[in-house]
Length: 330
Image (cartoon, rainbow, N blue to C red; front, top):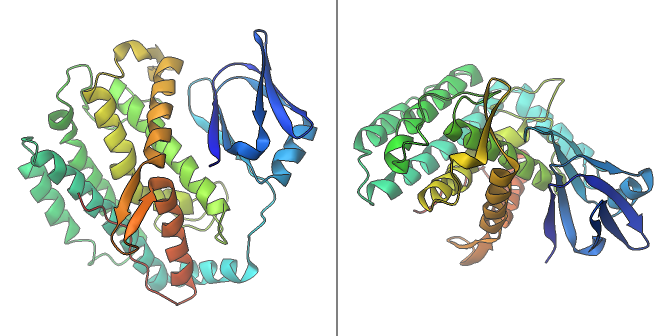
């Protein structure tokens, strides 16, 4: 099975025959390119044109993060699967306001249902979350009444804000108090974890989109514009509660991460390299975890689950099957 490579040290990536090596002052580490799925670069790393040509040939994506752990961008090889027909169908579902709102509602519904399932999971473990659950359930009734994506974004924001009110009860750790959602930079330790985790989720979905006929630039809940990918943001909303949030709760609950893994910088609180390494290790482990898929009747990994979600979208665009978002069973 191919695996992701995470590079935290500074150095240079060079190609040698049918493999490549990562060179640092301490020495060289060889990595067979045939075994690599994607490369996540957190350190200061230089690469050669020859190497980029080779990873393009092998359809390997490279994701770059800056010194502060913020996602910078992806080296995205020439599209091998892009379909003109699929792009036209995606555009049709975006330009037709009614079709766009149908899809946008699905993303908000999927996110809200998975949020509710996370809340119920912890309620069953003696966490006092009844009020949070009731408020989210009430907000969900408003989704169907929304007539445009602006209203849907408002409802989605209200649901998530309500959900965040339950974080302190779930986590129960004075070092990781939520307070309020803050970004760029996050103002406390918990917000720093959320921002880093969400960024990893957006990159993961973008990577999976690359392996389908879909174009990541055409989103539905998040407005398509000139500046960024948006379809990955839409799909990520469904999976953030059951992947990223569960990782955060687990890391803090098992004391795998502490305030020593953070630093004050840029007027906020940022995750240090030690914290990023711990998060990435759990993230990678989570993606390989398998769960029983009720429709297929067999186990699939979370990584595969995301790809399957994208295939469902393709069928929706081709009018083969109505898109229904994935909802967890716990």
